[in-house]
Image (tube, rainbow, N blue to C red; front, top):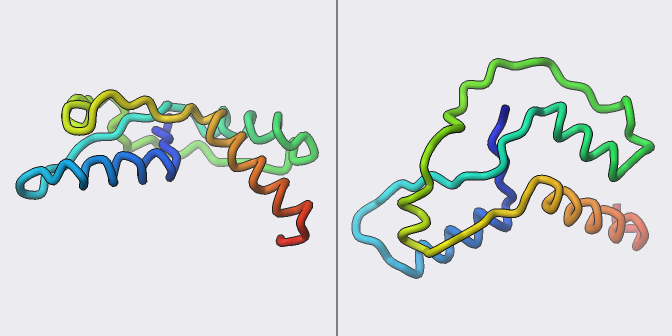
Length: 105
């Protein structure tokens, strides 16, 4: 299982936190949806059926701390709900398809 947070969500939290200008150099946890790599591949294959069976992975040992609190971040910037993996993947797929259609890839 791997925590997944999209780069737009990270940027949003970074800017919101910077604008709060906390003292010192605090560190915060940012929670995201926790998925297996196989789950992620399944979503990609749903969005790009032609990719089915072409994306594989090994079973790495997860060394991530998935059960952490984001209370400090929420207290600093206010309530925040990061996009789900499916939402982020859909945005990425839409961008990819538009760039393909425009001949920019």
